[in-house]
Amino acid sequence: MATGHTDPQRRERILAATLDLIAEEGIARVSHRRIATRAGVPLGSMTYHFSGMDQLLREAFGRFTDHIVAVFDEHLGAAADRDQAREAVADLVHELSEDSQRDLVLTQELYTLAARQPAYRELTHEWMRRSRVHLEKHFDPDTARQLDALIEGLTLHRALAREPHGRALTLEAIARVTATERRAPRGSGTP
Amino acid sequence: MATGHTDPQRRERILAATLDLIAEEGIARVSHRRIATRAGVPLGSMTYHFSGMDQLLREAFGRFTDHIVAVFDEHLGAAADRDQAREAVADLVHELSEDSQRDLVLTQELYTLAARQPAYRELTHEWMRRSRVHLEKHFDPDTARQLDALIEGLTLHRALAREPHGRALTLEAIARVTATERRAPRGSGTP
DNA sequence: CCCGGAAGCGTACGAACGTACACTCCTGTC
DNA sequence: GACAGGAGTGTACGTTCGTACGCTTCCGGG
Image (cartoon, rainbow over all chains, first blue to last red; front, side, top):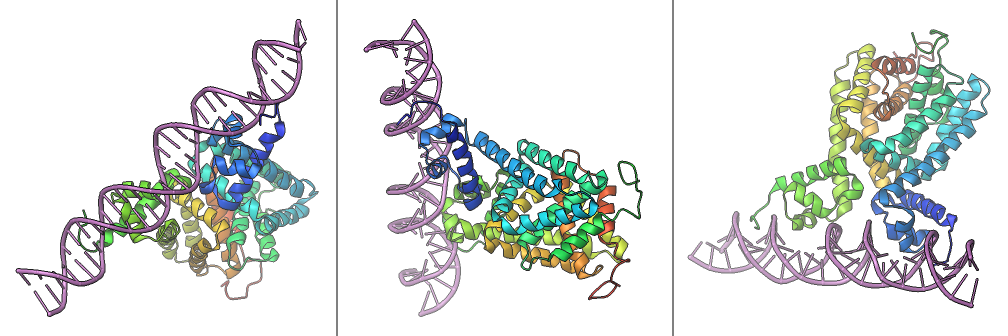
């Protein structure tokens, strides 16, 4: 066809289709052709807009982390005090492990890439950094770090468990990790 | 060649080569041919020993979970009391997140498959079940479950973090989650 | 000694892949 | 109104893939 001039939506549609396809079929089954078909763009557009599969994947996962970080913002940003923060964290765990199969799968795919290729780790670093910023509004840095890891583990185990644990257990784990009162109250960490 | 009769090592070599290849290059890059080359077996052996890629992958990851469960056994089996169990858990987290890039990568690949295909979840279920059995020797079931999730999160975050946290932080998180003294003493478990 | 059948292999085929590149179409300029 | 050049596309090429299947090799029973 050769529609004539620049169409910035093409690029977005390709990236969205890439994430959809990865979520549904896995990285092993993505190909330029399949993405093109799903996005409704000609094959030639793939190499025109992206230098190769790698760049495409990195950019697609960049969009994804933007989205996930937004989910974190949404949940944790509104919390006014520690208790609200704890509730917000529990909500987050349950939303991520329940509602959205999609986000869970994409998260795993990203971690898999990050575990092997440092280039993808920049995305996960930024994600972790952003989520810790939220948590540090309510907890000391060490606690935030532990809580961040706990969120990860609870989400994953809940999503994969045969009988997912209930909210009470999630909240108890969060309460335990954030029960710093008996410990050093001040400073940047755990003395 | 057609060596004549049954050779049970072939199968094992293929499975081992499959895991090696996945660890090094990712599921996206595995193929019958590549595995065959790496295992030093002819291409025909692939379809002879395994009905298809799916069966091959499932069996290979079965071997992997056997291995990982053995690592858990090794660390947690020897612990005699709660404090030793806490130390053992910390050792486990640090070994998994440090020494073996391979185990980390394979774990992620398995979780990725499990997140999408229930068939692979049986492997992760068994893994979680076995690790909880160990933990429940020292902690009540709820705590064991929380601790199991914490192990997961700490391991992953430590492996992917720009600046991995130290052992002290790992131990503190473990201590916090297992600090059950102040809570309900009864149930199936907390001595 | 021989021969039936199980165990295992080599190869060939069609489908799908990534990529390069000649090409068409539009738009802004004069 | 023509034309330069950038934007976007269609297609063709060489590679790699999974799988099917006819073939070879050897073992054990007769």
